[in-house]
Length: 107
Image (tube, rainbow, N blue to C red; front, side, top):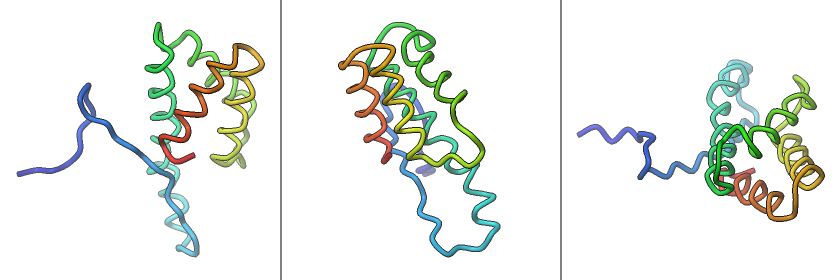
């Protein structure tokens, strides 16, 4: 029986950031692909908790965050920027939803 996790309405995947430590350089180049799902999952969790269309509130927050991040940005930068945008552009409840989503995925 294949036990590969799948994404679906009843599947709850809790992705967490990999700790690369002293791994070889190849691990760092592969990590960008492995870890890319983490902010995507945080977005999905946030959008679901906020309700409505994903491109509305959550989409605005993540889009504006992407405009502020650089190639050198880390997960902590994404967490800080999305939380700040949520509080500045929306309200305290939205900021709490963003922080809860980020926490759920380990950020």
